[in-house]
View 1 (cartoon, rainbow, N blue to C red):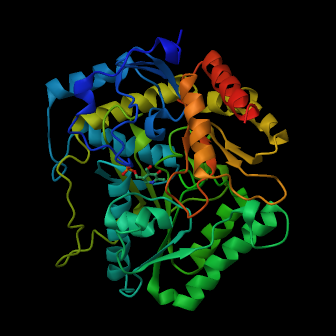
View 2 (view 1 turned 90 degrees about the horizontal axis):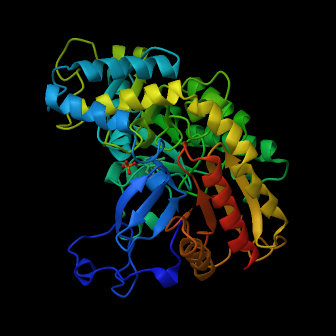
Length: 453
Ligand SMILES: Cc1ncc(COP(=O)(O)O)c(C=O)c1O
């Protein structure tokens, strides 16, 4: 049972003088830090002995929870068998994993491995430029993404990330990245029901391609469901429509499945919700290994790969990652996928997403809850001062909600440092293996915190 705050012992003094530079952190030496020491299932324990349910799966990656012995064994065995090998040549776990990814995606794909989601997207952007160059369209270099979308932290991926607050003091980004209006029905500038406003947002993509000149646009990158930018879930018709537009203009569709891949949304991949859509490129990381080891992957349709087979100077993909596709990471990914399939994790997410996590929809009767958006185990609560004005609640109030949950032993997230004035979405994305009791605890805790606002 979780200890209450009053029972907490203090974090050791020496830890407070740590030389560690934390991510996304203001300098705040007085703040009480969480220093995790152990984890089991969906829970972790800090050094002071407090237990927390991780309602955001680390950074949306710990999909199978802590302590999967089979995954640990797979990594250890692989490390003993072949500790490292570069993918300038091949090794068995990478070959097997690339084959499995192609099978799961449902068409013939060729996969290039890296270490993270950012790198998977960087790799995709280089492939796009080279592909068009080698197929007679050297001018098609621009990449379009959506406002509020997140695609990573490195300069190219950050340039595709259209979240203004993430870019302050790092701009200018890489030339050739453009941003288009997202399918955000709750605050849409268009009239109509969500499907209609989403389709109008899709139309803006076509307009942008025409205004820019189709001969200059190489790719459109999208998360099937905008995740860190505030859990924005379009109608499936939107995804189908943008896929059609991309096809019409020979603009490659890059589906960023870094968060939504491997079961999070109640399908193996987010794009599978939209019937008939088969992206040209799929990028993935996080849930690919459930966070046990780093791994990124960029899977391209074999027709695209064909352009890289051409003999001739500089026609092969001149890109390498020392650790990308590490044998142990690939072995972990294979075991992770085996467990997801064997334990029917995708069905579980669909069912418990409805019957358990879905209870959070009841919060819509609260004055400060503007919208509850959910797909599988990915849920966002858009918090407003009142339903009429839809004015976002301020950062202080968001901090209070997150802090109060933490006091009760629940970690939830928010869309921090994304869009000016709109960091008002509470995010819930628990491990896909969370027990029914875990999910009840999550729902009851968040519900009671919000109702006591
Ligand atoms: C949709 C999406 N794409 C890419 C990334 C970047 O992944 P990484 O942090 O592994 O570089 C993230 C990370 O949160 C993400 O949410």
